[in-house]
Image: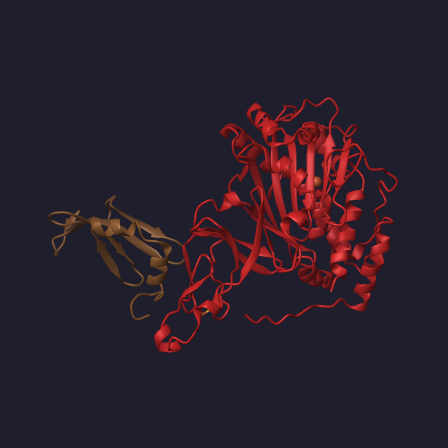
Length: 441
Length: 81
Ligand code: FES
Ligand SMILES: [Fe+2]
């Protein structure tokens, strides 16, 4: 297979901004311009989304042979399918004959895909097996083996399927670099893990993916302000007074980060049903139980653009409520523009009433019409519009919150754990990592 | 249920008929009763092909693999395509 490799180079101006970030970010400064810029967007398509492990789907979205969903990495449409042998595969959703889109339905089940243009037919493994009028028009000379659907590397972690466009990228395990320890809190609530509740909510927003990814990497700072009504009405068990307690953890050089918020006096594993609490004692290590049983809010970003939030939430203010988990993919579709993908995931082994309650809590708080989602997107959209103005593009933002804080040497998890919950240590690591990727040719 | 010219009976609205479809193909599947027995008819309204399979033929499908169907689909729109 012949591929012509086109590599985009940054303009001198953007290159010098990126080079400046190497020293500037650790010292607590980030250029405003990165949050909405056409050139930055174009460069990210190759240097971030062309190299990182990008989230594609949850395994429970394609449980049976032939089940498939359409997903994206950068501007590539990807078929994520379970083949007839049960193996998860990903293919570029482009017919090798003239480039027509092979699968058009967002989800479906098929053992073979037949292109609607000239009828080339592929097995769900990607192999080309049928070419109409092969004898008559190709005189049997076309070598079908040469024209399989373009495969995309996939690897999974506890139900999460990630894809990578870079054949030389390290394994997913190495890429996550210890962050798995934290993902387990979301993904191992029992021996059978998690499943998605329904299909993802999707919408388009005029917001840069990076501001969302940063927010979920532990921006507990905005919560009592942007979501003040949530505190005041008692939708979740926290108060502005104790809100900053906890710890923020990042994996140096990898960009992944999590904020673990704690509420003093909260009973261990508050808001989970007893069945799930019991199951977690078995699936998590004693160190994980020690840390996570105390956690109220766990909000993380897997670099670059997958975020997960676990939060107790009550549909009836003042009641104890349940935990919900939402997973979101901030998929960039233009400078300062994303397609938003939002899933609710639930413990597979939990009782049905809990799954239903959890989904209702998620829907009330997040999703296209969620109360908290509205607060966030209103701010993020305004911010994204502001930073592309001619004056703003030369400004920097302060990222110095928590510069003098020391890591907790007794913390049992991997990475660098810096108490408390709210500071900008995670973000400095995230934007340093981003600049490192963006500078690599 | 109505009697047909060929002596078989199949009903449009009968519960014996259903559609199997995805974004690539649509087929109508139904039980067809002959005077003395029963077959399964699979019809493609788009391509105009149909086949009536008896229990033994259907049973023989149970030990096929995907490869069998990949071979069938070497001509993706039927014979001559
Ligand atoms: S583009 Fe798919 S068969 Fe021609
Ligand atoms: Fe928020």
